[in-house]
Amino acid sequence: MHVFEAIEQRRSIKHFDPDHEMPEDEIRRLREACLLSPTAFNIQNWRFVAVRDPAIRRGIREAAWDQPQVTEASLLVVLCLDLNSWDRDPARYWRHAPPEVAAQLVPEIRAFYRGDPQLQRDEGMRSCGIAAQTLMLAAKALGYDTCAMDGFDFGRVGELINLPEDHEIALMIAVGKAVRGAHARAGQLPPEEVWFRDRFPSGY
Amino acid sequence: MHVFEAIEQRRSIKHFDPDHEMPEDEIRRLREACLLSPTAFNIQNWRFVAVRDPAIRRGIREAAWDQPQVTEASLLVVLCLDLNSWDRDPARYWRHAPPEVAAQLVPEIRAFYRGDPQLQRDEGMRSCGIAAQTLMLAAKALGYDTCAMDGFDFGRVGELINLPEDHEIALMIAVGKAVRGAHARAGQLPPEEVWFRDRFPSGY
Image (cartoon, rainbow over all chains, first blue to last red; front, top):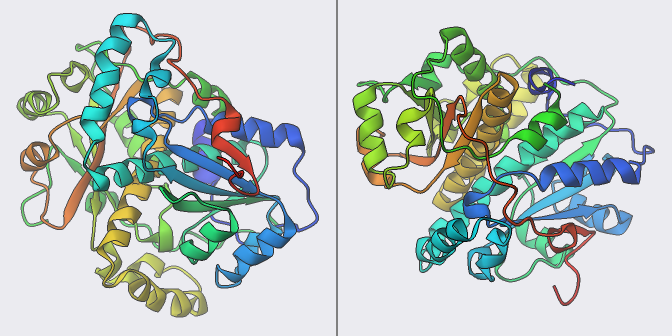
């Protein structure tokens, strides 16, 4: 499927065929796609938890206002961020780079993030957002639909997936075979309200 | 271009043809693609500033450690978030939805975000991350390369683009015609360090 087709056809779907099982090779393809998502300084600060265990799925559904896509999806991926990836031997993120590139960049990583918890968190949310769209478009290209979710009890889901203390959940993506289509788009803002030339207009 | 091809071929490029001008119809296609990026509750909390004015570009380059792609790119998009989009007449985000859907969802929006500045900010970073990958993959499909950037003085760039007080910058994307390819990938983490089945493993 072409990039623009996938962007146009991706819609949030909440009803999936609960009997469909995703083959392992499709999970692998989605995983490979996600892991090519860019991150600042290549710190790869995302972590992906692909939940298939029915008991964990039921627990997450309880923590998510009983939304059906949590258990009906063929795959449920919880996207998490590692707040400290910038400080975990950052040289390995540049180990195959030309030495002069690595020598310049690696020391910049700790200098950039150290002592700034808000920046560490923002970076994780950005990275997970980028990876989320990779996953949604790749799934669309494989014939799946998706639902990005952040309406759930993050603390409870963190317990269920054994989230480490210095990690945060960013969002979840349910991936499955749609059994019901989406409504028409609900209310897109006109381009002139969200896309500007050169600067925000005066009176915005 | 196929979705998986775009995901695999997208690399961060820092040297673009400074003489290339992006035609208006390509800018429009990129804009349309960005505006189809999903947001929680459809709050469309991203704002896009497409900077072409050479003086503003020079100013941003100064605020970005003199990185050449800022002025050499055919298009430079600053992705910003509106911290208060959830509170700006949220009924309009669901105006075309079936009335019973809108009646349920619209009141949930303010209940979800009110009084939680960290959540408002996280939501914006997530939304901008998702839209950033839309833009990067769409640009790739049109024959462009991109560079996502957050290494710059956010305060200074905010002044240059007239950023409103209750907005934040999330990142910038430079889009252009590559004149130099990327190095080999610098150091990808193995899948078993970042992608897990069901939960984080004990001893992670």
